[in-house]
Image (cartoon, rainbow, N blue to C red; front, side, top):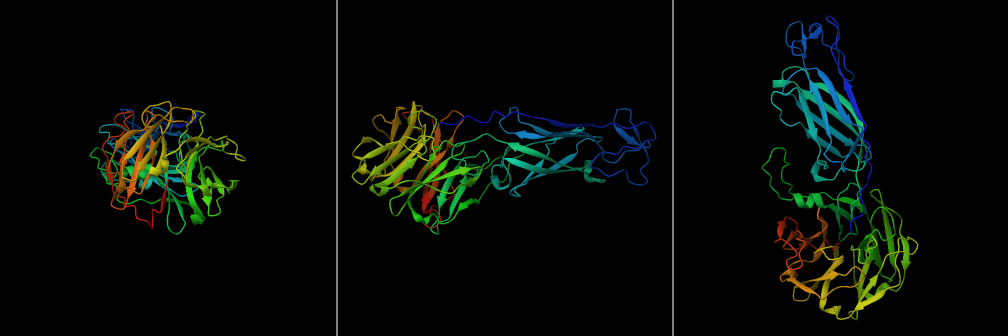
Length: 432
């Protein structure tokens, strides 16, 4: 279940209305250089635009509108806009996230016969990373029509505000896939990156296809755990949590906060009886993610979350037996429009089965999704669509794919869309 997005809607536009002075005066703009020697005074042209000494003036900015707060939950999407004394001015804006140094470059759309130029932001930064929350600086460079003459330079600052998303461990409004490699490093691969792998787009403004991903490292030393899962916001925080079981059977909780993992806290011992754990679904409708575990005898158990970091899970409840026929479980959330979070299980023949959640921690009878899933070593949640249904990422040594949900009990997913990720056992030792 998706948590409510941020409702912050503060938008204070920094508007600079600039006009020419009386004839014979000069026009000096904040952040720009004064007129170069020899250009003459700036007077008012008949069309209301600046002209110099009866001849074409150099490039001059006449107005600027830049949001002080860039809120990506706001519709319509906010823009940064400038107007000039010339038509068809090319504008390039570089934004830099203050905390990480991550950069974003924006270019203006072609606007023939217009004195204005604007840039729109899709919420992604370079290499398809989501843009993090927080302070940014920006620098605008405007090149004159035809590239002749001096550019206009402007700079300033703004703050990015994004709502929370399930499974966002990097504080940028984009869900992540968590990966532990054989060296114990835990990394977050953003879904925006995975979706862009090898994708083609022929429209104006599209980015080039992405051929490789660059994850964000969350920490090292994660080889201490033999089982891991992301149960959602089980401890009641704004961001999602991670649980890991160590070799002694102790379960530990790692809370996340604004892109960082907090020091772990002990949940309890005795978890060595389980051979699989899965998290991510809100199974009882309380708005928090829960945890599922199968023991070595094949019994499935339900751990409801409490929202309390000191005691994150309630006493377990038995769901049923016979689960030893499955070798993979994933709880991605709502797949087919039922009242609760759903569960997917793959049997030893490679057939994937769907268990629809009833919203009380139990499930309906299983439904067959299809065969051939034995080629994957990991099947993990793949984000939530605008309709509130969850997709899947399936990763294997011979190739990987994304399965977009259809919100249907009879046909849960669209056909697979292959992505260029080979899930080798060194880089992708554990994926969840």
